[in-house]
Length: 543
Image (cartoon, rainbow, N blue to C red; front, top):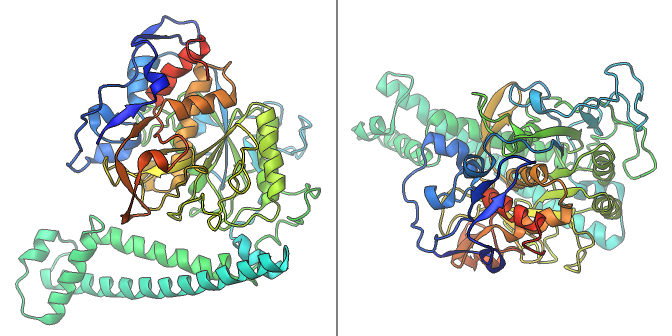
């Protein structure tokens, strides 16, 4: 597998000076000499699993972003300017041990006095704003279209067809998961009774000698499960999570009779109805973990002896609660983007997306507003394993209509990488597209913060987007004069690429050139991005 750097980037001098806010210069060179990089065939260690997104492809043969290399060889102990990154997402654990020191604080607001002290239009918004009120569970947009008869007859018919199909699929999946869970629980109980102990290993299972067909079946079931997860308790936990997921789909997301918005009290399809929500963007339930996990990827306090390291070290996280357990409303996203821009964010992370957007123009206008105010918007490509260039696979919001020209130059759409360098390094769930996806970054099995001072692995393009937002924050911190569009161009041009084919959608029959599944054909690299940023800032490279 041959990896190359962008030709323009390789034309830069081998030694480039990186200046960190007036401090002594460091000499660094772009990552090169990786044409004969071997494949990594050994399993990742526990330490590597927890930080693989920060590893270096050259030294570790893991497709990380060279974050640790950037700190060790370029950044060191130097501090750039503080960068505010808005996490436009679900609610966040504002008291998490690894996040509490990096939260944005609105110094113009007095907490708890029920007044808009800074006259920004939002009351008691100390760490951000909550556009969902006390709601959490929600429908998918296609269920709303059917329920409220939104749009024309053609849109309603398409939504109804997809809704019926997805409802039946969720019903079938829930039933299958319940059957598997019951089989695993029964097998687990019977093996424990046979062995006379509460836990066992693969070796314990293989050492069982029995002619009993039921026990043989139990062993077969458990061995199969242990090929998926390391322990049976992990298997049972994942199965239960799956059942809950499909139950939520049936009860809320795909249920045309459910109204999760009622308790908010606004008309979500009236953009002028803005007197809603509150100043507390904290997560409402423990399962509302998405925003906390995303925030940790960007900015969990580095090297403090706690569970995770974020990408960026000099960041304030602004929490904007606008993404429920279901599809987000266009109004909330548009107002959330505008809130972030108006209150000082230089980067907005949007780890959300949906297939229908009845008021997409509100979001498009907000993205343009962010572009006009030099704010970068980083967006997840989605987890359907689809080619977004196909008009049948829309993912909103985006920065163009019908594969046309970009309406704004500040949007980066991110696909997800897995930790196995080679033909299977694109995460099986990740969407892709030569027009609609800009770049790839680590997104599969990412270790980060969870509510209640916990840490865990989650996967999705939702995890890849904040990885890129974190690198963008590094660049904007040390090179604050670079514009959002320049930062976007730097990230896209300084990444690493491969000439080899990669499997997309987890289908081995769908091998595509890595360079043709995104606009840049690259994976983000923090080390190279900082070097290119320095060259751009000093006029050595013209974008």
